Amino acid sequence: MDRLADGDRSAFTPLFEALYPRAVSVARRRLDDAHAEDAAQRTMTAVFARAVEFTPGRPVLPWFYAIAANETHAIARKVRVAASREAPAASASLVPAEGDPESALSRAEIRALVREAVAALDPLSAAAIESHLADDPDAGPRSPALRKRLSRAYARLRSSLGAGTIGAEKSAVTGTKGES
Image (cartoon, rainbow, N blue to C red; front, side):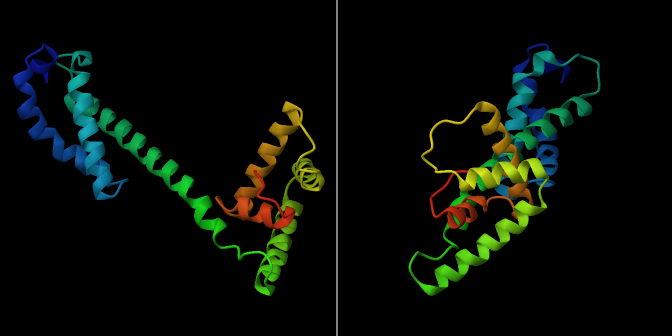
């Protein structure tokens, strides 16, 4: 690592051979195999790019493991974000189409679930959501403070109902394709 930090690029090959298996091992603790390989590659790229920041004579492994942990965390965050974007589409398909008895029963059950979850919230959040659901969706702009209160209230509601499903519940309650 000292040679690489001093600009000797030929020192990267033996360093890569020694550290890459460790990078994969670190990443596999948090990620599946395909994402772990990506994280390991990003780790080694970062080691090469940041070699000039390494202080010669210092221990290599703590510096390396910090980079590996950061890269693994970044990939894990991207995987979570991608999964959360796919979840609302999947949960929306769970609510039956309008017009059939099963759909009416499902909407009634969802309304009851949402009413129960809203009632379990703190009074300020519950009041914000109840007033929002009672309002005309085309009522016009709301104040930034009310939008923020609604955002926080819906976050609490999502948490109590299970993340990623609030769009379907609100749609069933309001009869709209509502936004949370």
